[in-house]
Image (cartoon, rainbow, N blue to C red; front, side):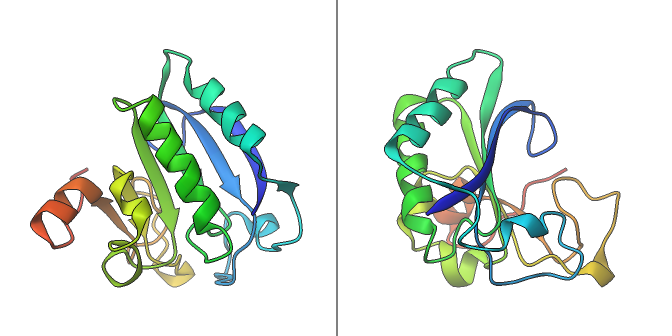
Length: 164
């Protein structure tokens, strides 16, 4: 797996101050994607155990509310193992901080039975659709995307969206 960048103080990708990882590689290529530089799987930097330790050390800051994982496509088969390892270690070290992820894959069709779902608190799912873009939406770019409470969804065995 490769990654594009790490933001150590992000206030735009989830609630509060966050550390954000932007993974490298995406095959969706949504029209007017906000992050097209993350599409090529060969660009970016190598994601290693040292990268995980660096991200976790940034999360130790008491002002950091959580970790956000975006892309590119974090749940792509080329990325999901590395992302799952990071999520597992994050929740082990910071059980009271929240973990958000964005994916073009649908939670109920692709993600709910994967190991990573055990660690996620919120997932924003669905591909960005430019024709459904709405600046007023919170945490997502187009109205087809859902902001999902993962813990409740797994418990109730149905998609439960987070209330704005």
